[in-house]
Every structure is written in structure tokens, then in C-alpha cells.
Amino acid sequence: MPGRLIAVVGLPGVGKDTVIDALCRARPTVYRVKRVITRPSTAGGEDFLGIDLAEFKQRRRAGAFLLSWGTHDLHYGIPRSVLGVLDRGQDALANLSRRVLQEAQQSVPALDMVWLTAAPEVLARRLAGRGRETTADMAKRLARGGAGPPEGFTLTQVRNDRPLEDAVAEIEALYFPERV
Image (cartoon, rainbow, N blue to C red; front, top):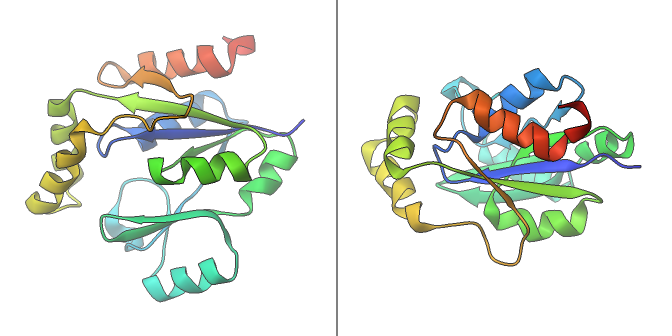
């Protein structure tokens, strides 16, 4: 039986990587997908592989990515190697964009999706706290605040503007009920 890819999706600043990291600590057998991003590795935030745009494009042409997308002047890739993890029956968690959910449904044998939400003021505070974007970039990201989960997908909504352990416990109860 293949493992599941559990896609964690939501607006910028909602805490996708924080929730993924906490779930991986709570569930050490779950694989955390390390994204490839066209930003310097020193930018902070999630554990990712930072590469330049030319290398990203070369890897994409070579078929190294299962999923890839661009947003906010950056490019993101999910390594194709995650399919081997799933083939071994291991579950994996990935921070995905809404833009690639349809492609993910077609490419991954077992896909579950969690849509994280948080109040707009929480999103603004978290984006400012990251220190990665300019004020103008943060404003662009927050302008998408009305964007909800994409239509046509079954996503489980989980609030992440409460204690982190509460959001993690809710996801564990939904996706790992045999161990809660």
C-alpha cells in the first residue's frame, strides 16, 4: 500500500512549515518533503534547497521535479524522489501551492490535503516577523487574503491561529487516528 502525500496548503504566513515541522516531530516516521526554491539558502524559514533560476530550469527540464510552480518572483519544486518514499509505504508531508493541487492529484497515488487558515491580523504579524519580504512584498501577499481553498478539491480545514499543539492534534486525529 503506497504512503500518502499530505499536502499542507494555505495563505502566506498561515504557518504551513511550522505545522509540518511539528507534525514530523510528533510522527517521526513521516517524511518531510524538502522543497527546492530559487532563493538563497540563507533566507531562513523552512529547511529547503536554495538554487538559482538557471539551475532550477535545468532540473525542471531534466524531470527532477514531480511538481513545480512559480509565485512571488520565486520558483518552487517538489523532488520526484518523493514517489520512492510513497512507494515504500511511508507518508510524506509537503508544503504545496494551490496552483499545483490538480497536478498533484494526477501525479500522486494517495493525496490528502489540509487547508490551514488564520485570521488576517495573524497572517500580517507572521509575515512581518519572518523578515524575508519588503513591506511592498508583504502587502502583495496579504492582498491575496480573500483567496480561499480552491474549488473542486476535498480539503480539510484546520485553524492555525490558536496554540500550535491544538492544530497538530487536530491533524493527527484526522490523518493518524490509529495512534491518537
